Image (cartoon, rainbow, N blue to C red; front, side):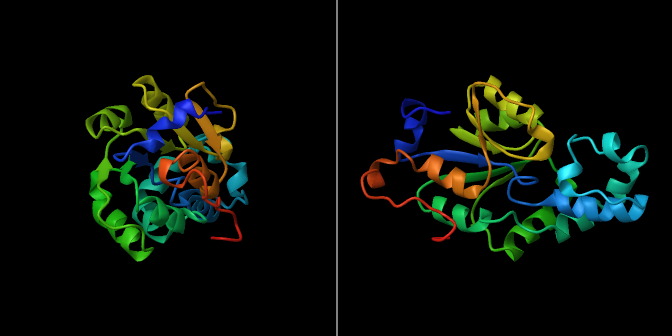
Length: 209
């Protein structure tokens, strides 16, 4: 768990938070399961995907299926619960950067998805598999990620990570990550020690959002 001292970055007037897209704000996992179950005549649920790499669940042929349906998956996936409303709140006082490993060829569908689901406007979207380097380049103070590899890469360059809980990352942990289970957790962590509202802020909960 982060200490008060470890989250002092949230007192800064220039906080920059990096946010992954897939598995963090976009529920691609559920759409992938829908597509793959149909293609492979199986009946898995999202909770069954305990390995990030789909071939370890569905077997051979998963890559070609993903490439065939990649645009559809990105376009048709739904936002993760509370992500939009919490990011709206955060964007009032924190600079947000979307940092995704999606290929650049999917910039248009990604941008249109963010617009369609009314995510905060004006947030840069960075397409890269080197998320650690991106965090350095954009002076990111904290990163929100679901993939253990990228979480490790980012913590190695000194940026703490909020690890968004997913079935495929539940065996992963390190001292520079804190697991979060939903966007209410994220809001409360990022604002826990915010200087301007420390004394009188009411925490988000399911009832207030």
